[in-house]
Amino acid sequence: MLQSELVFVYGSNMEPSQMRERCPESDLAWFIAQVQDRALWFPRKSTRRKGGVGSLRSSEGDVVWGVIFSVSVRDLERLNRFEGVPNSYERDRIEVTAQDGSPHKVWTYTAVPADTPPKDYTPHKDYIELYILGAEYFGLPAAYTEKLRKIKTKNIDE
Image: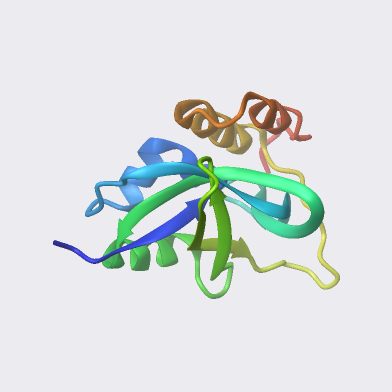
């Protein structure tokens, strides 16, 4: 049996086919969780994603919902490469709370801001659509999915 790690995903990695492609060895067992006192923001611009790409930032009272996947150690290393660790993203341990209230210490990816001071780049509508597809697929709370729909996006390609 392969050793596995738990990873909290909250952005485009919630889209199931993307995660299956990135983690081909893993069975991708999953459960829904939230991270308290964090908010989504978009501190890097991606040519591939045609706009800002997501991250977590401290924000008292806010909550970000996502999915915890169980991935093999080798797939975790693959995720590091896809996420551009350590230049574009960093992999960090955070504490999340599952829907049943149980706490879990898991890995997640946060963007390395592209600018000093950090800017918040507008994401492309196609990129945010991946967030929404994942949220709907995994059954994240409806109010949170609606919040994702309200993220200001751009429709033009860069």
